[in-house]
Image 1 (tube, rainbow, N blue to C red):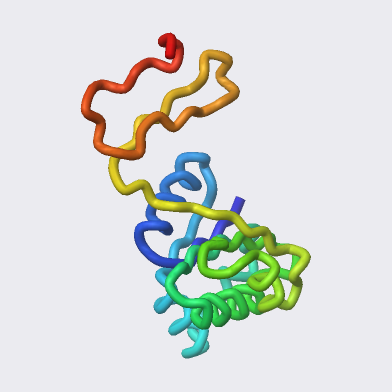
Image 2: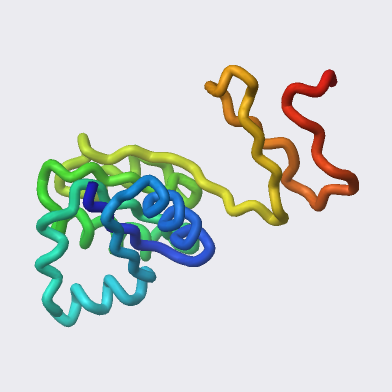
Length: 145
């Protein structure tokens, strides 16, 4: 899939890594870069091929509104827009777009420290075991609790 990610560090870095690992074609912009390019009417033809736009701005609702409005105007009408719902809710964010029915809210928080992630023995449930600095080696997901 062709994915555009626009937002702020550290959010964009981690989401970009996950998307690339999954084999997607990804373009990443800092908020100020994409808004500046669109305002200066720079060539943004690649937006017409975007299938999913991921908005990751969590600093101000006003800038988030400007970014979502610009993304909505720049990507195809059938492109899905995922919006980080930390500063504002998904319903409010959707109201700032030309096609609110294509907006999906989600929440992403950067981990403050390294986290150990294990897969449940069935393989169907990833388990996040630690979000703080480990004091000892994390236990295996199959160890008794």
